[in-house]
Image 1 (cartoon, rainbow, N blue to C red):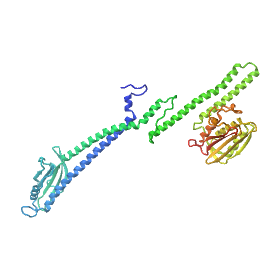
Image 2: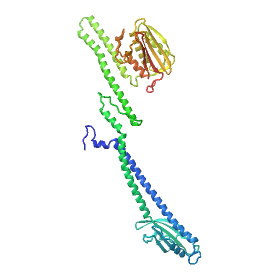
Image 3: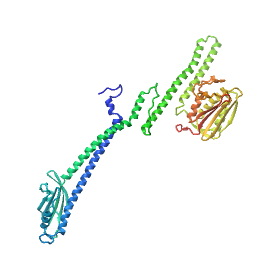
Image 4: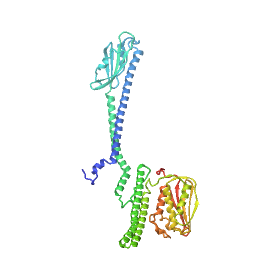
Length: 481
């Protein structure tokens, strides 16, 4: 047995256990079964037709004899035969020659009168026919003699007088059965040839059909954490093409997840390293002076609080793709908007304005939406000063709700607008450096979890407007609770 790779079966075993071999084996079993059924059905059809031909020949000979007995005349007297059964038999046997493998038997008063046999057919007596020498009704049957099968037809002669005769015709079925067997041998040979040819073609076709699966297998083996770039060519609209596309989509998600994980580890390590360094540095130089110790502990506590908020935000973002991230419920937009405005007004002294209040109900996670809008409000506070205008509002139209926060701060440069929703991205501004750079990322995650998005409208020097747009009904995979 050929040795294979560790943990894998030998190559020969894998060959016979492969999908290609199983498909071919199943195909061969079905094809062999259909071939056997076809040959058996063909045999029965040929035997039935052969029997019909023999029966027709028997009936034909009997009908000829009957016409002679009823309508014929004795050539010696020119008169009808009447009750002279022997004369009928003599005239019939003198005028009719048995067909191929046929035999005529005539009986008078139960005794054999005369016989005629086809050329090449050995003269023989059939006991089953002799037993019907006094029959008064038409009889059919088969008999076997010296390894040959005979089919016979026995017909009584109606003369209307005393005494009677019986006419019998027998046909040797060996010739018909031989033709049937020859035909079956030819059919079986052709079927086996077709079976072999079809098997070779099926092996080749199965190889082509399963080629995408082999590519899928090779691609899966070659994929590692360091290389998720390989993809499977997906052509056509069959199941294998769908499988290839589904596998490629899975690879896209894996590649995105690995990239996000690497970025997450790198950014989180960087963000957590700073407060840890600050805490360690102050603790190392902390003296015995009570005031100094109090100031150091206050600073350490503040850094720990910041680390706690950072960890909580990171955990929230990590849960954003989970199905239990949202807890949808029916939310009244009027109440939600006014509640958001009241909470935002308490963040800082700004010229808070309630621009619009939508009326209606939606299905959404009230707490997550509040968290997203509070992040936008905090962002607006960070980029404005005391007395600057900050606007908050809501609108409902076209099957979606829009919740926005607009500030009058310095605005966002166009080249920065695409990246500000990424994690740990902070722009220069009045108070921008105070946060961890996760607020907008959380807002976008909340919107996308609702099946929506976040839009940004901003120009340098003209402030910025962030709008959370979500459908009034949650995605199908998020069911209301």
